[in-house]
Image 1 (cartoon, rainbow, N blue to C red):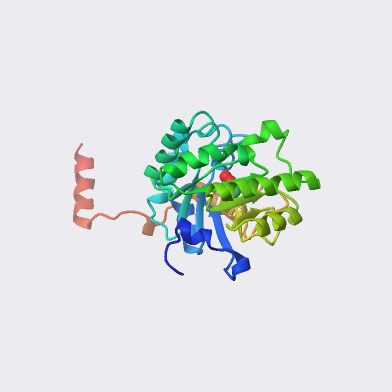
Image 2 (image 1 turned 90 degrees about the vertical axis):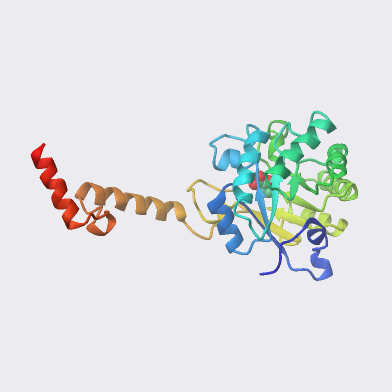
Length: 284
Ligand code: KIV
């Protein structure tokens, strides 16, 4: 495992230049950050998917900048070797450049080394504002979950050649504005490939095919912490939900049968003190 990645180092990680694919995983708290880091992820994304994966919302639009800072701080406290990127939530970069920079600063002060935001050419002004405060920005194109209402659902994007070319133009605008990497979510593999070839910064795909410069998945999906149906781009490598339910059911059985706790799971007192305790209780 190498040293901690920085935004400039990530920006050079093009597979076309012989670089290894980038590995990014989400984490929202200390245990998941430690898991991602020990597994050797290059980047940890404190994604606004925390809203749906952990906080029980139906979409990502409910999470606030304060909540994102709270989760970012929990991840950063583990001092991961992986570079920590935090998502700017909906409405934290839409109102004014001043608000946008203040909100990006909240995530950096919580421990993020870069921020990610969704959208194409229409976001360039805000990206430039954040970068003028010396904060690196990661872009996010394709299925941008914060636009779920406008998109009419969580749907694959770039289906037509026209829509695909419009994504290429957006990617070029983000790269030109100075984004150090771009997440590509839920689009045909051919569009993922075209964008990856069109920009000098790495693309990190999630449902954007195998030609991107890296891949990202939600950690909870990879380890199967939930049994819910996942999008087709998810590969589940473990079934922690099932294992967890089985372990908890065994605990419940042991409590009910008296098998838990055993003597080894209890604190002992010296025999003299225990005897004195008995005598005292008896006297009362
Ligand atoms: O919030 C998130 O988890 C993300 C990934 C899907 C890239 O933005």
